[in-house]
Image (tube, rainbow, N blue to C red; front, side, top):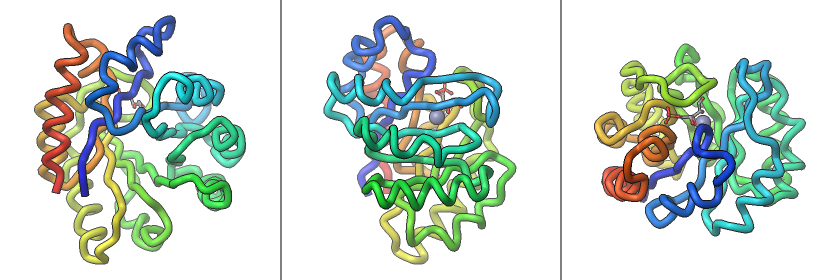
Length: 220
Ligand code: DX5
Ligand code: ZN
């Protein structure tokens, strides 16, 4: 499966979001957009209208990462605005399951995200129905945190389950991903690397994106 970079502009210059995306777009396979509700995580981030507006400035698929307690309440708005992938946290329980089934009804691709302490085995009986697994490599809630090595064995575990059943499920990793940690994630079996700080805080975001996209392209 082809690997790719998914820039996450959570902490990029919000007054110039389109320009920030344009700097990295040529090396990206999708844009990763974070939604936070002040409840599932303490911070707030993005409203669904950002999907509508990013659709106008970029042809890239929009991967929505919902760090919200009731993701089922977001599905229709995100679908109406043109989201491509809806990734919800397993930890939201029935809200997550309802969001996934509604997303399928709305023809969105789906993803299941796991916090670091959630056993990877929980994906086992959902793998046939989802398009991607998101392994968090930080505590969700903000950009700029260091990568936690614990994520690597979790990527390997997800990779083993997916390969054993020969499923076309992507493995995305999110948090503290830079060239060095990104390389390790790809070696462990990830196919999508999300990144904010390593791109948008770099002196040259375009060059940083070029280098990280080359690393992601090495996915098995
Ligand atoms: C944080 C978000 C991430 C964030 C990553 O919870 O889910 O997508 O933007 O930022 P970095 O790459 O700086 O860790
Ligand atoms: Zn994210």
